[in-house]
Length: 226
Image (cartoon, rainbow, N blue to C red; front, side, top):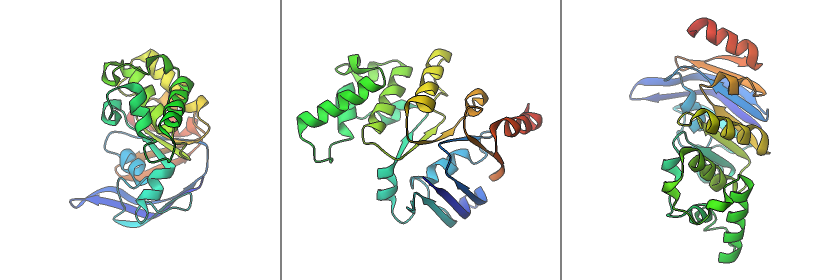
């Protein structure tokens, strides 16, 4: 899916969050790095209309999230660093099922599809457990299951391993890089994970500094900030 930014700028209370971004991306695994406050998360939230540009135009698969946020959100799944903000329902199965509440499926069909999504990501055995009782890694897998059950075309993951220990961070990384067929935009401070992407974007001070192969982009990032 083609992601296009044409002269996109974003300002909040006269402070520039993104400054004149121009790019076209169609790679399957798109990594995004930069220091805190560099513009990474603002970039991510533009992709499904959580934020709208102050100027310029964003297009994701031919959809403008600013003018058609409903269509943008139906094709884009968003995974946050803290999965607790995405857990809505009491049990694990109910939480994934909630995503399908307006799908037109029967109750049994919804439950079956939700369970299949949980099993796909290795937590089917937790279906009847209280969602908020899960470990941090299990909660992130629940968030991924709930997003993926609706079969979006694009997954945007904003620092999805930030709150996880090493073992769970590696597990979630493998899921995002290897188990998901959809295009993924991955915002991360984990340079090992960033290095596995097809292309890497580096932001600094609200500007897009570099776009290219991960290794040289990471090298210049470390040279400036290491």
